[in-house]
Length: 266
Ligand code: ADP
Image 1 (cartoon, rainbow, N blue to C red):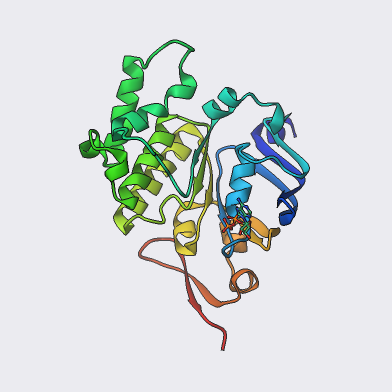
Image 2: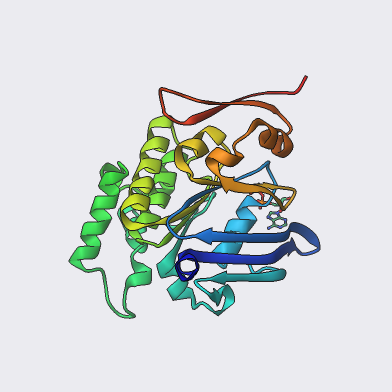
């Protein structure tokens, strides 16, 4: 029992959220555990981004309670939260002419003392993350001049340089080609295995979710429809309920993952 509690990271109790008078999340009850990789799935507008913004404290629930590490999320100091949780947002915007290297270095800021700069160890970490994500050759380029996919890789690199305990990914691979999607998700999975990183990723692509996630959370119209281990919940009936399409789920021998094919119901 005690071991179960120590693995618990977030606890959401009857959480609701409204933008002004538009309710978008209703009565969410969730327990998210350390070291797991959760995929948050659902149709457009079902509340995935709003849920991630609530988990990292960018938004405050309008109903219910969110706890992180056993304490109310609202009681966390912003620097402590930034040292623990990194968010890769859907629209990664850098307005000024920072270089790629400078943006990735920003990932280290939550770990620095008030007046201290980056140490040799910090620079080494930044270098190795840029190398791992294939952006070392872009180091001196201005981020504002990169393509959408290149910017996404910089956003993920900044989050990994933060060396967080939890990584929140909001459609972080939507602009990437298949090679870069798989290599970035592979880099993240290595951190799950080696460091016990926890990942919560909003994804559109169910076939990417089967490659990447252990647990799936399906939202529809702001409500939690299904949650469970990938093998349990990735079923044709679930996909039909959530997305309104016919689906066929099979184990693909080549990739070793489940694969989903779809068609519009006749
Ligand atoms: P998803 O990520 O699943 O596409 P979102 O969480 O982005 O869903 O949006 C959920 C709902 O909230 C949608 O109906 C969207 O139009 C609305 N919404 C999102 N952001 C805002 C906002 N800043 N102000 C008002 N409504 C918003």
